Image 1: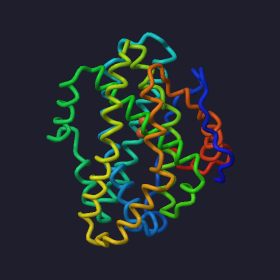
Image 2: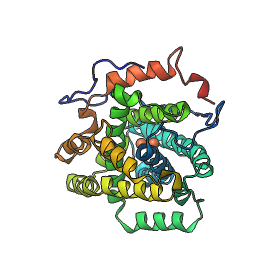
Image 3: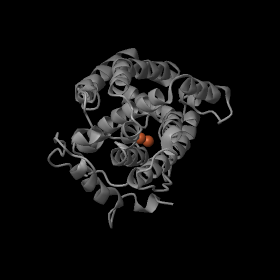
Length: 299
Ligand SMILES: [Fe+2]
Ligand SMILES: [Fe+2]
């Protein structure tokens, strides 16, 4: 898709523009008809590993997001918010399911780090994560979800709204998955936030949690990418890795990301203050319109 003028703009009172998140039971066809290449982002070691690490982390992360919202869902009385929560939970569940399909292939294709994230519901790590979530007040757990959702929405807006990112050559089905995931992240970007607010979440908690995640997320993800590169002998090309990592940090995916996130730290901020309506509409047509690219992936 060719992207025209950037649809992003800050608007003062943009409430209720976000439609109900629609649950689409997607079935991607990774490795068909051509087998997936190990380096599925062409000739880019750190970006390939960044996507692998994020894909690995999404399923357990999204299950944690769902659990955080469910801790409050019985208390929501607003029928509109109830319906949005149902859409949010359904979308995140399908995201996790489809990323697991990709993750199985990534493990087979030489990304052992992805295995760390693929554990069954009863596994020790799963129980450890749930225990950690339950060790903090449920309001804090939900604030983590709201902050993480703002990270994903900010990245999603970049992915869908930047032609340079769309032009990155890579495995077409992985790119389809990422575009669909980014699209639905924008569709439900304010649901967890609105549950937090509806259930009386405190601004100081919301902002405090984001302040921590603001500082630590990029370094933690970077360490994950480094670990992934070290676990893959075919990526042991230090000069190339350093050169491409500098390019990645200076490129349209990462550069300016923290600055773009900063409005969330402002008291009174709402995710719908950032208008992504036109971007969503353009991509709705592109992916799921009458001749949408992904209509035939809906199962
Ligand atoms: Fe998601
Ligand atoms: Fe999400």
